[in-house]
Length: 354
Image (cartoon, rainbow, N blue to C red; front, side, top):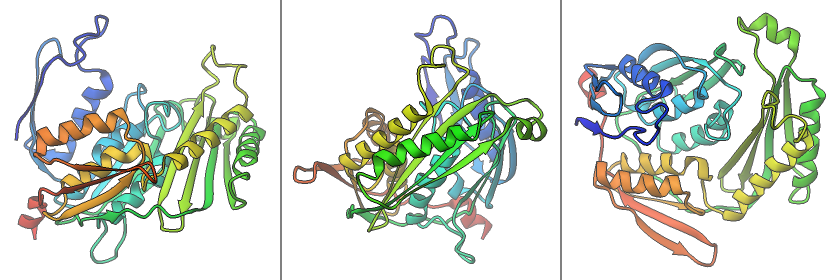
């Protein structure tokens, strides 16, 4: 059904209306669909969108340098399984940076894609799950990622309530245009904190040198340093956190060492483990959205402390889908059990294609 959004960034006196990354996302939606109508007023503060049919197929898009490509992927993930044909998406843009507000591709691969598999998003013949591959890492528009997702007729209901015990921690420290010792220092400092929790901690380091960056990228990428940590439990629960350091920021340069980044990332992961739940705070709203789109059956999941973004999403889901979640607090484990009845959404584009 048509969507009308008013007062888009109306309080921003310097740049009201749609931002460059938001306009770029609308162009991406237009590429993925057939028959979509987008109307924007002169000031860009009002948007009327009439969605068309999700087609999928091979799509290539250039993302602006104002946001990480993970920001675009996060908006595409709920749509990809309901396309007419399997989606093969190639995005060009920033892959290293803005992780303080945008999910990185490594985070999506480690945390969100395993959750999508639990909803039955996989190829029926080969059982191949959604795949995400980073082709080129960069802090500029020269980065490149490839995302492929099979289409499904309907999602499966989930019942994920057992947290389990943390059995191992895996991580990835990535740097571009920095000495290889930077990632090693991050990994060493992070393991120094995490080894107090359990011995099975392994952090991989990936350093892209200056000379390699110059030869592989058309535009010389800037320096960056990031850390992704993932904790796995005995019941298959995955909790992930990430943090990044950008030396190009003059205010941050010299104030934060690689060791500080490692300790910060480890502390963030321990906070997620302490909050409990079967998903981390970064993908709470996406999981609840998939529950809304599931069959007309009860779906349950246990979460830790709900973020403000998740609470706002719950209100939006009630307005858009008419789905109300039953929230039950578990005072013993200090977690929240959420359950709902799905809307029974089916992939009509695929049904007509079959």
